[in-house]
Image (cartoon, rainbow, N blue to C red; front, side):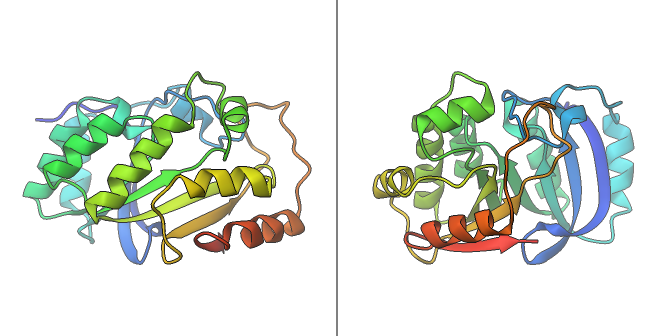
Length: 227
């Protein structure tokens, strides 16, 4: 049996697993405190939890065999691996969302063939932005290690950037120059929403900010604005 703090279950989504209809599991808790985060109830662990039996019942009734696991940060929980093994035994195709700060745990899961698709969030393209927006002690080395091991694994993946600011051309160039990424690798740009964890955080952004960011990133990878 798996032990994982599950704060929510969505039986069907067309948006949470790129290219597939999927159910979604939301884990509670996160090791970052991103200013723009709109899942404050997951980050601050205020949502009531589902029991393992309740989740198994919902999964047994699922109309789809694709699942997206998101949070919060799923990899912060050591019970995640047992949950993935359970899902494999029931024939699920698995997507995992991560903020990229647990490369060793992710590597272990990849080595055991427990995930099929990975989405990695890029919070910022230089250390100052990363530390400012996440309010954490992490820097880009950990994130780059995560992206590097996923790239080498040949597992399908996507990068994501919530546009809370237009990154500088210099920071983006430095970020990608050190990465073994290609023009066919994909980064999705997501719109910043006002309902965020840090209520004092109100960046001045508009559609032009998205267009500028997309133009900068397209020099290195395939960038698309996700509606």
